[in-house]
Image (tube, rainbow, N blue to C red; front, side):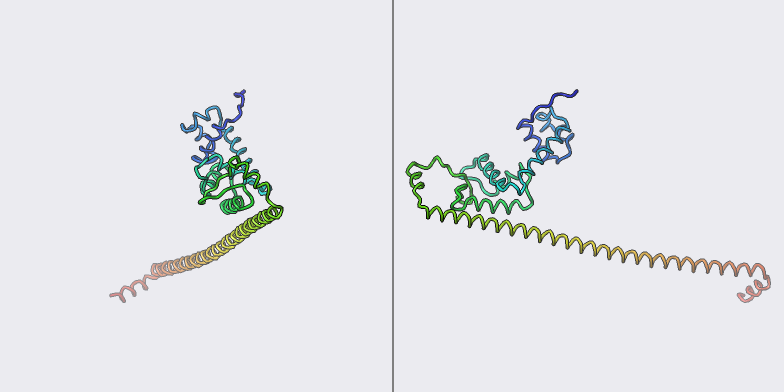
Length: 255
């Protein structure tokens, strides 16, 4: 019986992610032999690495599923809180953090831009944007006076804020719809180009086949002609052997 299985530690999981980034998925034996990771993963077999990586990918796909609309909100918050950069984190830093740790859809950059724009819009209060950097607002920094002041907002102001939020969300939804349409159009264009290239390749192949048939026919005709000439020469030589007088006449004609 094998050794009892232990729960994966954060250090092991981090080492596995780094190893896959370096060697690629599927090269489990190479990863276990790499001295950069073998000291951390020495308790794991190649089967363990394979199973764990499958679980990581499955979890990432579940997180990135369109059925969970707040998945990107959570990842953005995680990125900003984890990096703790002074003055906030840039869009590039947030995107790199998420891409290094999770599976993301092909249009991730467009989604991230739209989501950051929405979260930092007036009325949401989820992110604060200062000089192209995003940070999470610190609610504890509000004084009691400011809290009381915020608490006395009129119903009209709240309604206006809600309308702004709805409008911002509508803009984000519209942008996401545009991104989806663009991706569909791009996919259709790529497919059309692939079909055109395939048709062109078929035409070239047909033309090459025709040229090969012509060359083969010419070669056969040349071979038949050569055989006929050879037969004629053999016939002439045979006649010369059978008729000595003809041979003497030819010699006189040459002299």
